[in-house]
Image 1 (cartoon, rainbow, N blue to C red):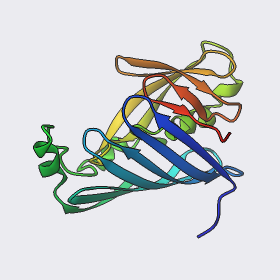
Image 2 (image 1 turned 180 degrees about the vertical axis):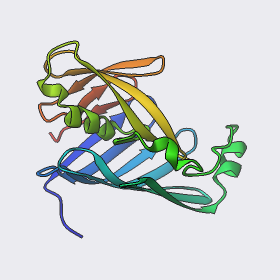
Image 3 (image 1 turned 60 degrees about the horizontal axis):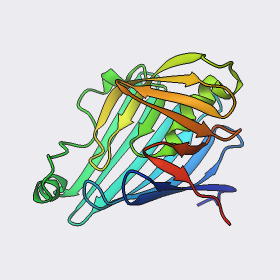
Image 4 (image 1 turned 45 degrees about the vertical axis):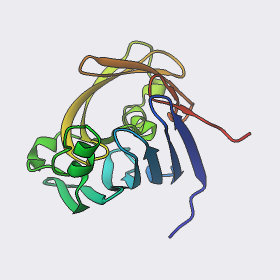
Length: 209
């Protein structure tokens, strides 16, 4: 397994949790990351992300695990659309019900054709994945108020269900991008390479001392 030249670490501000990713972005992006969170029940998600030189997502593999359950999903973009494979051991929905939460349903999707327009993947709760449309669109080089709508394959944690989603990214000037999805909006602070420094209500990046 190749070593990675770079890494980033975020701490969650909406719940107890964090994310650490090691990556190589010299040509597109190849990243391996770990997401930890305590809500809705404690879980760990490990992922591997491959993005082409055009910053369109090629594949995402993710495995989420908690007490009594493990789930996995693999998304791969092909010429005829997205291919989605899943796996499951144990019973996540039983763990969620025991904690007073609604079930997550099945991992993946029964309708991969609904993802056909997606060029980006978004793993919920991970600030890394906001970088993908920012870099692909080149928002760091666009004037303020430049807005673009993007279609994504949205992967929900901890259940790993995959849904089609529409998001809007708007440049607010150097180092600032507005993210919108439905009625939700957040103004993100990003570094010169498009990686999130602060995502209000979700996460803040922690740099080594």
